[in-house]
Length: 312
Ligand code: NAD
Ligand code: UDP
Image (cartoon, rainbow, N blue to C red; front, side):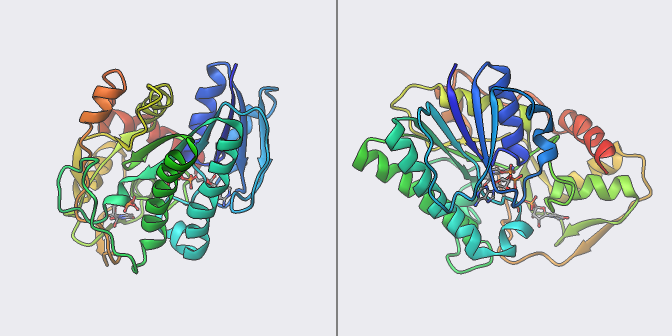
């Protein structure tokens, strides 16, 4: 049995990860300040003696002993949430990973940083390979998140070079599935909820921008394999589903799958919204035992729609 710390464990990905780690027989300590996370996501774990919840803001240091692994997820992830207080977002990314790297180093624990496809910004290289250094605006409305995550990656590699900290860095592409907050504001949750309520489906811009959507179970499998990968494989590694869709195509698929009167409407495109996104997952396939997503967008939307039907 391993003692594992999951920061951001009450959020969408974190709660799915905690459940998987508990199922595999580990002791899980979930640290979350509920900034965007919800207790309902971890309700079923609260009575489990192998699960602990600590309400803590990772901007502040934390001292826990005998840790084997740390998964650092804590950070608001949807644009409306990370833009609500951009300085909070940068502090969470930078001071949060610093505190967690200190903890990992002290415990000689492996630490995984949850980075993002956003480090590629509005990319000129398509699909995105890990060696691409990206096209990020340092002073825009997305920068608190993009640059925060880039500095967090830098700190991981510097702690590894300077102190021998055992790091793993993953770059996650748009992921969806059960446990997403209905008020999250990301495109998959917005479109499904709007369709279920018979409201207009809000396409930002003309809907020609693309994203590649990964179902949460596929992502969690990749995450677990990355933590177990050979010690000298540090990443960064892209984790995502290479199936690429325009936002208009996503809206049409949701309309096809939900019985609704909703119509598509176009709204202003937010500033710095990336025009295209698609992961090259060659490295993940090679290093993570042939890992590749198995669940197509249409397949993954079925349980996601069911989840939102029950939630709203
Ligand atoms: P989420 O908003 O559902 O979860 C984030 C969690 O972190 C929440 O529970 C929140 O309360 C907690 N948190 C925020 N600030 C904190 C702080 N200072 N101290 C302690 N807890 C704090 O988002 P998610 O989709 O589950 O994303 C989890 C991680 O994965 C994030 O780091 C995000 O950047 C990364 N990621 C997610 C996606 C995706 O598509 N879901 C894509 C790329 C990267
Ligand atoms: N988007 C949209 N309608 C919405 C929410 C988002 O058209 O109601 C667009 C958004 O402008 C972006 C894409 O969908 O082009 C993905 O947005 P999301 O916030 O889910 O993720 P990110 O932009 O971080 O990839």
